[in-house]
Amino acid sequence: MSQELDERYDVVVVGAGNAGMCAALAALEQGARVLVLERSAEEERGGNSRFTAGSMRFAYDGVDDLLELVPDLPESELERTDFGSYPELQFFEDMARVTKYRADPDLVEILVRRSYDTMRWMRDKGIRFYPSYRRQAYMVDGRFRFWGGLALETASGGPGLVESEFGLVEKAGAEIAYKARAVELIYDGTRVGGVRIVHDGRVTEVAANSVVLAAGGFQANAEWRTRYLGPGWDLARVRGTWCNTGDGIRMALDIGAMPYGHWSGAHAVGWDLNAPEFGDLSVGDAFQKHSYPFGIMVNSRGERFVDEGADFRNYTYVLYGHAVIAQPDQFAWQIFDAKVAHLLLDDYRIRQVTKAKADTLEALAEKLEGVDPAGFLHTVAEYNAAVQQDVEFNPNTKDGRGTVGLSPPKTNWANTLDTPPFEAYAVGCGITFTFGGLRIDEKARVISEDRAPIPGLFAAGELVGGLFYHNYPGGTGLTAGSVFGRIAGTSAASG
Image (tube, rainbow, N blue to C red; front, side, top):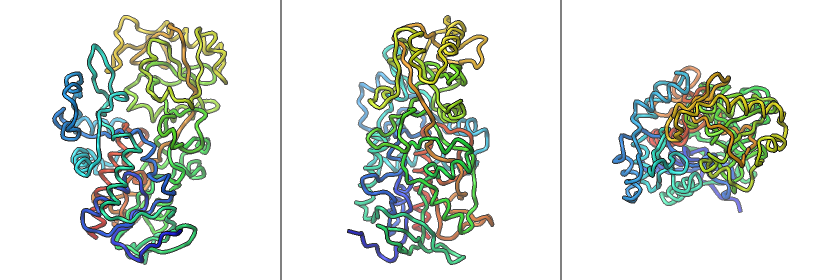
């Protein structure tokens, strides 16, 4: 039975991922009457956020700040863990460094300065967080040490975040319409006054005082990927939802919004070679393969093509998704030996994995489908001979255990491949979200090509351009969605 919608709302939120739900929660706080439009059916709700591991990057000065977010953290965990700190200055430096100093300084200022307060706001609403032990800390000498600027993740990852947010939004009185695809903004040339939608197969109009666009990027649109990212990107697999085809961006551009950001850039990672075309909710984020710093990656020629240990994976995994899709036949194999097998993330142990295993390198070479065996064995021999074995290996820090005279080098975490059994995992490119989108101001108002806010139109989440260029610090996407979603919802409810 089709859900009947009212003719008018204070705020209509287009998209029901983390950014959209934070916008809805913020608007509800202001007493607004809110409608959330979700393109998918209810059982697929949550957008890309549902497919994430739930890691969130935010500034904190020490363990006391974390205890404000995880007040029930057991004393036993505190005693065996070094959480360190991640001050605002470090967050600023990471954003500048990985984006090659192209990120919009005003947006970055808002993101960093409001990151912790937004985490507090989410916690106060009822969102639960836990230390990201398995993903962001390793046990060394009986003690966990966190690295890479990420300490917490949402309880039960992305699915847990999404279910919590939906429960909060529904309890606060918002309406949620499923199978409701927004196709056009209602715009009189002066102000956005609602949205035209296809709901359960019928075209209808919903009037609103304000509209918040939070419908994601265009990563699920193969034609747009090829148009903006370049040849070959139509073959990338989509890590998340099939719904993010750029509708929110297109609707805004149609009424004169300014395109902004890195339109030829995207968040893309090493993703299981035989993963499906779009995300699988039964697997979630587990097709990702991010433990490459502890091994090597080779292409079809059997050659290494990146410095696997250039930095913590939080700062390189997006770059290396791009590197994989640029290889011959757009795939690579990650190679590990028994010395580091215990460090591999749980994602490597799922049933749906493309894997090879052997007791000798020669036998493994024959099992690496699509790879030149002789080239692979030559690469491994050359690599093993170059490892600085006199430097101590430490997975919790950039240990400087690298290679000598090798191109490309391996800067950290270099271990010889000499201890059987040997394991290999085949990866392709999985695209997460696109970097190009709409320009917004400090109130999350969408800016027109005339450089003025478009009255009644706001935006948050992946369809906002200007934050990420070339690369991305892991965990920043959910935080940005929360920070700007909260701002957008508050602004939209205020008119």
